[in-house]
Length: 218
Image 1: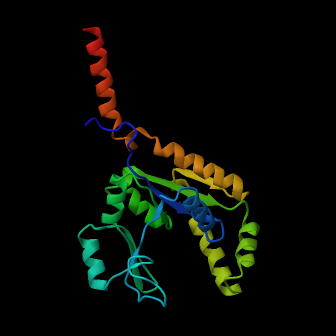
Image 2: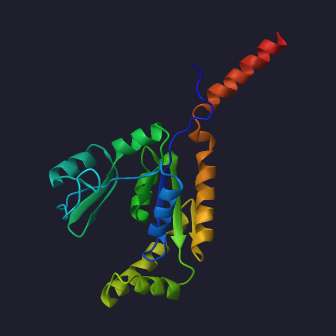
Image 3: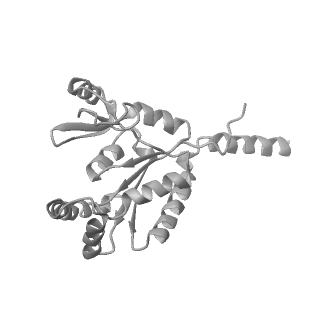
């Protein structure tokens, strides 16, 4: 049976930003825009918190299991944070990509760089979200009401380092207006899905066009 010319491979869609720039809100809206999108389920060595489900919230592993996966090249990216390991298992992401399903990653610049350098890097779409200004970034952090002054100060301090890596991404959006930023985000995803490399059926389709042309000339 001829290959479907519209069939495509999935994308690894990476969203990164300093805390408060709107990344999580945009990710949720993107999932609502296309319900076929799925979040990458991270693996971690920390203990499950009340209500967390293995395989849904996280894949909970022992430190030995986690390190074995890293050593075997089975992690797309990984990091050691506050005494625990976190990472993105490669197998479920690879399966999704080959099935034409996009996977969304909410990770920092270090994780994004690791994925870009992985075996699946050619299918990566990375987008960095910038705030319109530093005062506005601080205002958003305060208005969320989730953190105290000390935590907000630490997040603001960390934001400088995160923002300095903006030029390592495919696209950069300034989130000065949520609706407008979301519209630009969906435009980017739609266009990237149509990249030639993401459409494995195109080569077969072009080959058939050549065959039909030659048959018509005969």
